[in-house]
Image (cartoon, rainbow, N blue to C red; front, top):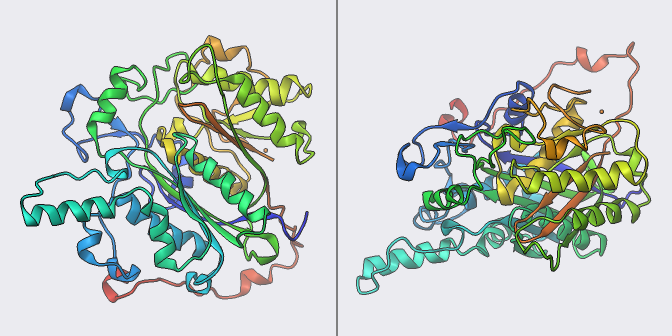
Length: 445
């Protein structure tokens, strides 16, 4: 342990049926299926798309004056970008810091984002001959340029460190975390805001992926199960705040290693995942920091429910953490996507937050929809042990993208000091409960 260790000191996020990380934790431990079917995004029977997906339910509320932004501009901003401003504030506050204290600081912003219409600034209406239409197009394009997902955060909070978006498909947010870790280790920044975001507003994307048999036509995230027939679309907008240990007021976990690589050239093509590349990344991750792979007591996997991806990932985990070191004890395996679907670019940080929830509760939430492990994965189980009920447990978190970009993070819990049971002075002290709001209406909400 070193005072210069990089730690996660704050977290926040929006998830399906969960507006906070506390609500996410409750849904995870209750075994709630956060994948729902309704018409809040588009008509249920549109294009024969399966209506079930893991949706962030309320994405329209935003206090533009709080962030000092023009209301006219805010109306054109992608809801993801608005939420990123909110969860950045919440994650920093969760670390016990007033965001105002960080103005002018060397704080970096790293945001993992996917490529969809709302994230690439494509205007809805192009009629340059009409002044009003041109103005609307300019606002839409400027407000939703993908680069601004990060730079708008730096602008609002007056951060002076690097500010960038990262797009490596589904591994984007863990790739962003790796870049943040590298900058902190090199001393380029003092703190880092690391975000991942993915929301779906275009039904054509879902239709296209369903036609390719990538998405489950049933809308069931049966990850690793014999009945798995693809992944279910999910959403998350989430953030973790990184600091050095000596500056942190709260510590959720220590980030031991964060690395990424890519598959390179493969005979099976660019889109097929590589177990060999993932295994190599995992081995390098624990070897560089001299961590015994047998010390790993929980693995949060990327598994999405696809025919190609899951067996390849389990093979990599088995070879790196079981076969190579000679593991005889079971290795618990968690998969957040079984609970809320695959939030693609946001999935890496969402998985990190799930791990932090497990740490705080000293219990691993169960995976859902796993009745019988598919044959291609069963050969690795045991010693791999998918969790199907709450399980009392340093975890690894894996993430890979469709183009072959892989990311892997090792984190260690914050070991809390035991207290003497006979000295429960804190229980006798009255508590002050703060209810925050900028006006009476918001406090009463």
